[in-house]
Amino acid sequence: MLSGYALLLHASRHPNRWIASARDWLPLPLMPLAYRQMGWFAPANHSHTLEQSWIGWDRMLFDWGFGRAIESLGLLLPALLEASYLTVYAVPTFSMAYLALTGRGGRMNHFLTVFLAGIYMAYAQFPFWPSEPPRTLYPGLDAPTVDTVFRRLNGHFLGVHGIHTSVFPSAHVSSVFAAAIGMRRAAPENPFIYRGLFLYATAVALATVYGRYHYSVDALAGGCVAWAAAALTGRIWPCSTTRPR
Image (tube, rainbow, N blue to C red; front, side, top):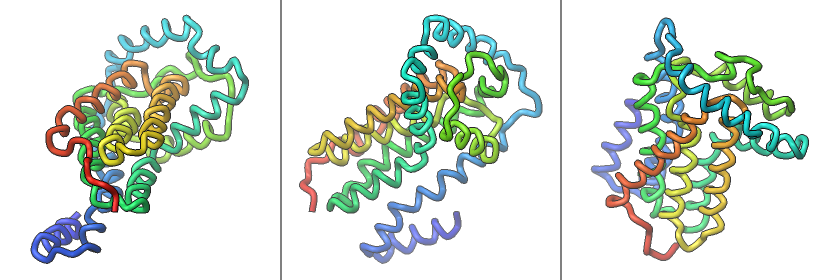
C-alpha cells in the first residue's frame, strides 16, 4: 500500500508513460486486499435474521423451476454458469489488456472509474448486512444436482479464500456489470466486447443463485450497485469519443 502511494507521488511530480501505465494496473493487486480487509468486520455470531427473510424468495424461485430449467440440458448450462462464476476474477485483467493491446490505453480511466466504484461500493456495504451464503447455511436446500469440475473448483476457492462478513450485495455481480458498463464507455466503437460482457454478467448473476453462492436478492442488489456506480461516475468519465491510437 505504501509503495503504491509512493508511486503515485512520484508520478505526479515526474510524468512518465511507463509510470502512468503501472498506475493503471496498480488497483488489481489491491482489490484482493480490500476484500480480505472486509473479513475483519465478520461478526462473532450471525443471527441469520436476514437470511431467513431472503431464503423465502429463493424457495419460490426454485419452486417455479429455476434449477430444473438450468439442468434441463444436462451438464451444459450448469458447467457454463459455474465456469462464469469461476472466471470473474479475470475480468478486469481481460478488459484492461484489451484496452492496452488495441491502442486504447489512454481510456483506462473510463473503465477503471466505474469498475472500481462498482466493486468497492459493494464491499463497503458488507458490514451493514451480516449474512452467510445459502450453500453453507442451508446445505442441500435447492442445491444443484449436477456436479461439474468448475463447481468443485469454486467450492475449493471459496473455502480457502472466502470471508464470513456478508453476501449482500453480490460483489461478483456488481463487478462484472460495472466492467461491462466501463467497457461500454472505454470502447463504444466495439459493441462485441461490451455486449459480450453484459451477457457474461447475466450468466454470473444466474450462477450466484443457481450455485447457492448468493441469495437472489444479493444478485439483484449487485446489479443495482453497478448501475448506481455508473450513474455516480458518468459525469466524470462518460463514453469516450477519442479514436484509439
